[in-house]
Image (cartoon, rainbow, N blue to C red; front, top):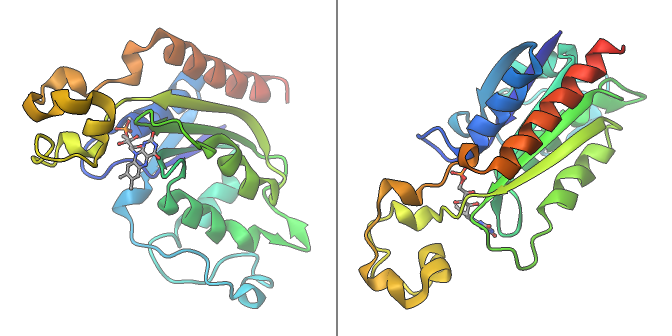
Length: 216
Ligand SMILES: Cc1cc2nc3c(=O)[nH]c(=O)nc-3n(C[C@H](O)[C@H](O)[C@H](O)COP(=O)(O)O)c2cc1C
């Protein structure tokens, strides 16, 4: 049994999203491979769907090319995304759009188990990320076992160096006027591993993956 996991998590560092994807796979007990989409160069689907119909594979030659076969062959897929503008990141949606080649005449990833993970700062107004993650995957009739959302309260501006003067960014949304004197300390970079609720959800998702295979 092999699980493949993709994360569109924050560039450079190992983000909550990355670690959530890795943990779900590792805790399932099966062999796994992790791919950080943010480190790859690829575009969204360009709608040339008459070209992917015959090979049942996207023909755009960019960094995603080696991964279609791996998605097809994997027994399960874990996808992780940060929340951007209340929804799934553009990088993740672009990745999902490129799976369109699997959906001609037959659906070659139909019923494949998927687990989805999201991490956001915690700006919850108009957050439709869970439904937005599931919606494009419905086109592939995959079996979504679980969706996990974690709110890390890490705005990108914790690293920008100008948070004390900014009245627009996420730090100000979280801290209000306190932001003008706020020192950025390591404790502010919250980890899902410190949230017992999220640990339970990750373990439950891994267990669902494990059970899916043990009864099939
Ligand atoms: C372009 C952009 C838009 C964002 N929009 C939201 C948002 O609408 N809601 C939210 O909770 N967080 C938002 N964030 C914050 C990120 O979700 C947060 O920094 C990210 O989850 C941190 O990831 P990590 O927990 O994996 O480190 C946004 C970040 C960026 C870069």
